[in-house]
Image 1 (cartoon, rainbow, N blue to C red):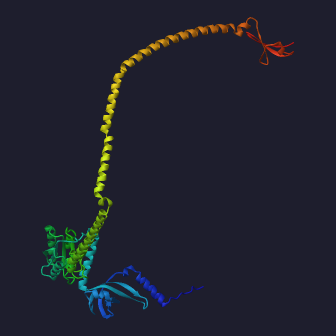
Image 2 (image 1 turned 120 degrees about the horizontal axis):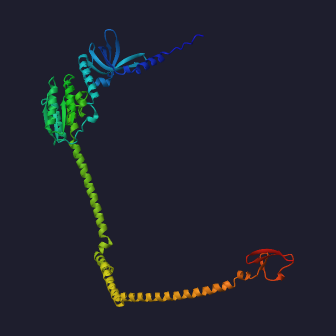
Image 3 (image 1 turned 180 degrees about the vertical axis):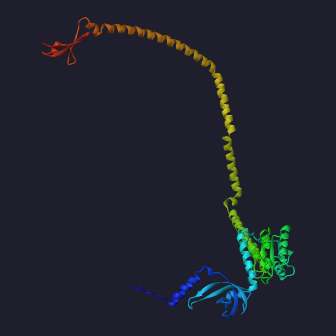
Length: 442
């Protein structure tokens, strides 16, 4: 059975092609060179065709990019373009969306700029952790720029207007031409060696990419990176970017902007001072009111109103406590106990304790002799009595009597003392002094 063929709609095919184009990373950023033709502006956007000897592609520069671009292409111009490729599924086409455009000659300079920027970035020259903090209230500011350009006047007038107490030190340098990088480097090194300023501005007014190329010097970038003094870059206009901007501690869009960045606004400082003054005044008044309230409470207090009486009462209490303390004074107690001790010593002396102890010892010795004598007499008497008792016991000992022929008769282990207690055929036991025998009554 033949496999059923599934036919796509035109929309489905265009959506699939659009998906493939939009998801291709290689088309997100493309660098294209070519010739401009059929350029036209519609609703603020520039539409044109970019072509070479063999092919062409539709291109668009949107209004926001066109407004900020220094270069607007015309038919026949050779250009370098950075952009991306996007699809238009409804018509089944695709376009080149332009993010930047330069003439072919300037494009080479820009490409060299990008290559240097990427290399220095990988080395860490733009690392945010290396950037120094710009002082908030610098009283000495260095300016590295030309002494004849408008940039210097803009910086000076801005600093004078915003923070007139700051002192400005000018370090003259070339800001255009092949000798400019070396001149700028020399001026920056002098800033560090003089150690007169808290922050330095490196600045130049606007110009073409060639005019600003001296600020893309690799040697200048490394000098700025190793600078001990915090530095703010104010080169060109807002849309101009140089290597100097990326390596400096901070970047301002213009020389005037750099002057603004390194100075506080005196009006803001005055406003802040006024605000703090008002806060202090309010705090002072609140404290004063609290003190007044505490004072009123104090003077209305019973002890304050009756101060003399309270003092008299306290004085009486003090005298009472002093008398009580005197009565419990350790010195008084010790003296009293000492008197008692002296009395006891006198009484002991009168009693003559050592002689009395000696007399008692003699009395004890006499009593011991008497006790020993009486004890010996008692023992002797008891021994005589004991011996007489033993003799009597021997005389009345039943065993001695039984040796003479007497016997004892037992029936059922009971002693028989009368013949009346016996019957015929009773079994008895007769005890002699040297043994026992059994017998029957006949």
